[in-house]
Amino acid sequence: MNQLFTFILLLLNLSGTFTKYIYVDQKMGWLQAQSYCRQNYTDLAPVSTKKDVNKLKQLSSNVNHSIWIGLRNSTMDQIFTCILLLMRLFGTFTKYVHVNDRMNWPQAQSYCQQHYTDLAPVSNDKDDNKLQQLSSNVNHCIWIGLVRNCSNRTQWLWSGGGVASTFFWRPGEPNDFNGNEDGGCVWNKMWNDEKLQNQKTFFCYGAVVVKEKKTWEEALEYCREHHDDLASVASETEMLLIQKELSKHNTTEHVWIGLRFLAGDWLLVDGQEMDYEAWGEEGKPSCSHAKIKCGALQVTGGYKAVWDANDCEERLHFICY
Ligand SMILES: [Ca+2]
Image (cartoon, rainbow, N blue to C red):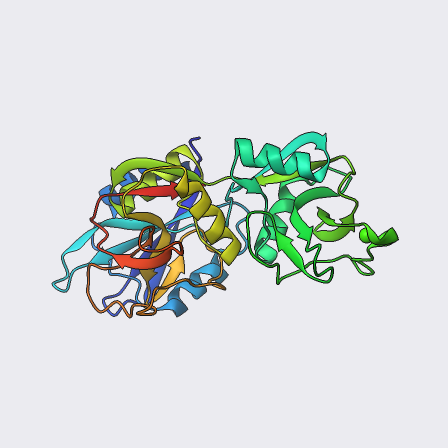
């Protein structure tokens, strides 16, 4: 899928604060945008603070489509390298697929597990909004991976693992009508509990393991050319689903995810908030080393995978969605 976006070039002074923005109002694909930037602007300083990133989000908030943003990296000696990262501030992430066949909840679950990774989890309001965008012309409640815990009926679980902790129930729901409404569905951003046997269309979640050894930046490019983005891990459930997908493959010990140290902190390149973190025992790396700025999942060493900071130039397998 070759997606075209306009993009913004950031002109920064040497202390890393914005001096000027250039909004390039031409639609280009990732590689084209990158080469445009490389040809025309070769002396940009790096973005250094999260405040800069936030400022940019505000400035571009009136643009209603995704924008490529070129952020450049410099060495200590002001030798500026080419565009390092095109960060997507407005998610068009396609980790979700709306399957337009009506099935009951268990059938929908099997279908998603067979053809994708699982029935869709919803980790935050961004996810909820995304489902709304994907189904704006649908006028019925659509199954998601939400299912009542039969041994504790006040608790809700996600298909694929994890206890649900963020909810977007319609007022008055979940009402457990007749005591057998055990599945969760979403319509117009609000959730309802319904009988598992009801026939509905449904949302699957799909992560794709790519077994080609690439640097982090190459992996990002690959995902954006062929899928949508390097996979974020926005919740425990997504972490479990990605691990499940990884368990089907024989991968490198570490696999790249859409996690990057930038502007003084770690962030998810698809623009999702970092509500969930899964760093290993040593905790979140403060990233003093200039090269160790790219996030990977460490998939061996126990059943629980953890995030790990790696040298961006390492060649690893990776996960797209
Ligand atoms: Ca209900």
